Image (tube, rainbow, N blue to C red; front, side, top):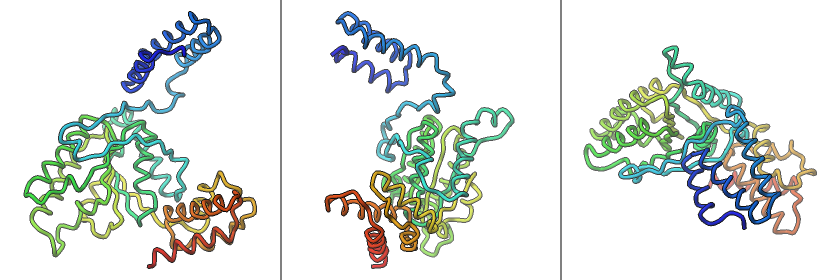
Length: 327
């Protein structure tokens, strides 16, 4: 093997730190070692790959990923960190939702241009709609497309029964947003943003929401704060005007539902499927439920010894999924 253990560790360290030149330097060391061992073809290919990569304009390489930031200290108890790999092109979305997400990405990518004219890009986004329609996945898409980590706020860690602690923990999260560029996702956001005038409201809940509104107003445009809720009717009205963009998700229509099912079965044989018939069985199901139904039909076919998906198998799986959600 041409690369030693030390070389491999150095390559990983350089990649994790986003140190491009160190990565190339170590690779050239590997190429030199390969040449000394008589692996001239490998050495030549490595050098050519490095030369090509260095000559490639950065603009053609897509967004440069921000090195993964591992939460430390108190923040580590409040968020989970991920580096998603899902692309916007992989999601089946309505035209309005896709356009809204495209606008967020476009403004973030042109942040410097907007700020030079005194404007901030969209950086506070509220996603609303039924469960399973792609809200959380959209936050992951925004992170991936912008080359940023995704920090999902653990509400069980943020919301405290002790007076004042929740606001302090929220401040920790928003302070991190100022220091570390990332997408910060508040899932099941109604736990924080519920209407302040609710009958079961208590003083701490009001203080928690007021603190969130204050911190949201002060959030930096470099990071994205994304809140997602299945229950927009529970949110305080003041929240809607504090977000730069409010994106509404709906259950997919028949044609869109068919696209979701087809997309999940891309590696299966669906040549005999009557899609119009399948689509007629998709009513009331979310994107996530459609995917589960497609997976169920596929697994049954595979375990039966073939990869052919039939119209009847898909219709049955979809009907079973709909029946399960009504139980």
